[in-house]
Amino acid sequence: MGHSHEHHHLAMKGRNLMIAIVLNIIITVAQVIGGIISGSLSLLSDALHNFSDVVSLIISYIADSYSKREASFNKTFGYKRAEIIAAFVNAASLLVIAIYLIVEAVERFFNPQTIESGLVIWLALIAIAANGFSVLLLRKNAKDNMNMRSAYLHLFTDMSASVAVLIGGLLMRYFGWYWVDSTLTVLIALYLIYMGYDLLKSSFKVLMLFTPDDINLKELRARISEDAAIKNVHHVHIWQLNEQEIHLEAHVDFYEDLSLSQFDRILDSMEFILKEEYGINHVNIQPEYQKDDAKDIIVQD
Image (tube, rainbow, N blue to C red; front, side, top):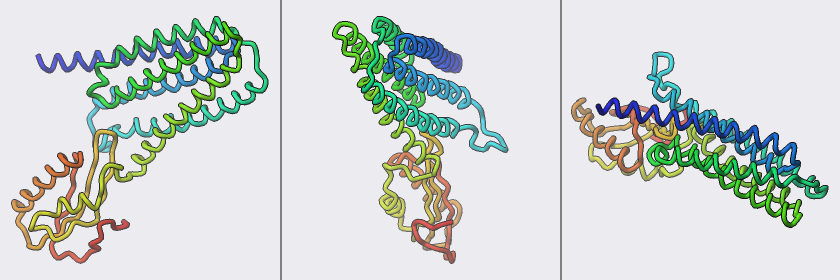
């Protein structure tokens, strides 16, 4: 019964993601057509934002599907880094799009054009309704799944951007403030840069195997060296495989020539500390006794 419930839960999660993808594709196509017809740059910028989120949702859907696949002899980590690579590429393209929008908006600001505000208003309302429904679909799964939470946040920001476009459409319709279109485009583009740069930076750090920002390596070394049997912890590497998995490998020099059972007792204690205090869930320790090698905490391989 429990397995059946879990399978149903996973199926619902995938179904909800697919519904959100279809809705956002419809919104994107409608906004692109509406932006071209109405002449609204802010509507086109919101369409590009929606398109980037369609890509993000598809990545989340694929990652959700691939996460169920087991590792193999030639794929010992499986496909766990696929969404990190995709996030990096997606973030880089997001920055390029945002810069292009700013250039176009500045040019449009000095050469304002009449915009069909009625179409902008209706499309913004449709986008708010569709994104709001998508947000409700993913809200439950977003509480306990980082992948789904990322998709949820993208949709929530989409809804917020559409609210801004709606306000702009109303201001253009009732006050004739067509310059608002360019202003909103710049604001949306700056927000895309903010979100895109943060995603680019975090995915780059994971791809480059950097130590996670919240782990103090010197403090960690001192903490796991507290056992009286440990002489030195050196040649340490800490990296993220993806958002859920943090790996550590290190050489541990001992004062005495310990038995395997003694080493296992110390290893169990180290693994508990690393998991509970630092969130490291994959540990690989090389035990040493009077081995002639570099004892620095960081050793260039």
